[in-house]
Amino acid sequence: MATTRTETTPVSCPTAAGGGTVASTVPVGAVHAEGSPLDWGASLVEGKVVLDETVAPNAPWSAVVRTGHVLTIVDVGGNQSADCLLYNADDPEERYSVPDTLAWQGNAYVRTGTVLRSSEGRPLMTVVANEVDRQDTIGGACGKESNTLRYGHHVMFQHGCRENFLAEALRRGLGVRDIVSNLNWFMNVPVEADGALGIVDGMSAPGRRVAVRAETDALVMVSNCPQMNNPCNDFNPTPLRMIVVEPAPVADDSRSAHAARTAKEGA
Amino acid sequence: MTTTESSTAVPQHGRYATGQAPARARDLHLTDSVRSARDDARAQGGQVGAWMPYLPASDSPYCPPGVDAAALVWAETVAPGGYTHKVLARGTRLRFDDPGGDACAHLLLFNALEPVERLNVADTQKVPWQAYPGQDHPLLSGDGRVLAVVSGDSSGRHDAFCGTTTDAWNERKYGDARPEGPSPSGRGLFLKAAAKHGLTRRDLPPSLSFFQGVRVEPDGTLTWQGSAGAGTHVELVAEMPLLVLVANVAHPLDPRPGYVVGPLRVHAWRGAPTGPGERRFTATPELHRAYLNTVDYCEARGL
Image (cartoon, rainbow over all chains, first blue to last red; front, side, top):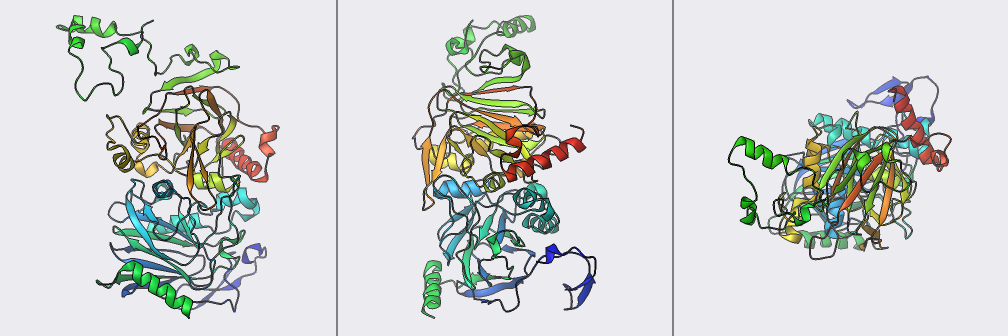
């Protein structure tokens, strides 16, 4: 684990630009082990691709998904939590709301058909296809401060999703007031009969996907979770692939999603 | 002692259709000059309503058992569909009572000194490994600190999943969410309470609620549990200086076709925050570190 390093000898790290390296003493987060199986997948919905990007392990990402467009998130390495917040792109003070999403559907888990609602109770996006049993929106995001409660003060300087959300929000003119409880694609948080709740081993696998359709122009913010103290990324942070398509006018979303899933299972 | 219950001059909430006070009210007031209007206004003082703040708080007719009335800093009965808010010092004890069994106390907490630090429901469920708030459950901020802790609970029926109601929800469920109407939304009330402290909708995170329970079935279904009955209470300790927002509205999942919510009693009194010598301070590793973070913040600020 990179974060356990205590020496001040510079280590060679890849840079963001140009594929170079930099010698650094900064304890950066872990990335997946060499040889980890990666399945880059494809869009769950047919249509014209308007965006196709990779989110590196540990990194934030955001994009505006236009009304009617469908975002497929590919869990490339399997059991990689994609912490996710949604905003009305035209009025970002209206944003994703966990309790509104749950209360409207009367269920604590997110599955195909779940309408992801805003703080005003309005639909922001709808889950149109999903390849894991249930998706989480209870577990919230990790953060350097809350990590101290969960794991001890020695983890204070580890990177976390709250840091990613803040960095990405600030690029978009938003800030700490706009960060609220979130979705965790591909993370598993069961609630047991006595109320016991926690992050346990995931139910996803390399190449599993979820697809969400924008019901309004939606700003989607994602943190590719760097957490190395629980199984939310299988202790092996892997990339995510984000594909936005404009569905073909004649295609019915549910039918094409079903076709895609059938094709995958048949393969 | 007269009450507004029997007074036609002060229509009870929701009794009359909008703008239609009975004609008799006009005849009860002589207001044809400033002097007579002033006398008329002043003659209205001193009445007691079913829901009202009690000032000074030590005059509360409902001082909680075992509490020195002289230590009270907040005493109020919140109307059905009403809201209240207060800034409380660190260490203050805050108690909610549900006298009739139909109250639903939707709660938001902020660090009064830096309101960007506020209740984080996800952390409040995740960090203690427990979905259902009860005795000793910390109400955590997103900054790794304890805003308040549940120090007493005779209800056991609470909810941290469903938040509160929106205008959209109440318009769909009841056909009405007007702020002046019979079925105001909890978010609508929170927005007004927040505005009175300079906060806006950006500052409102998911809330939790006391006195109307919800449980999660194995398949995720949110099952209505409702009230534990009349006469229960919840007590909190403010572990930091708090801005407290309370909305007393029907729970989103309340299955009754009508908008049923009862009065909510609120009392607060001076006290000390949870200290290192107390059992609760080290009850779990997570709670212990949360308290260490909280004390660290407060010590540095001279609180």
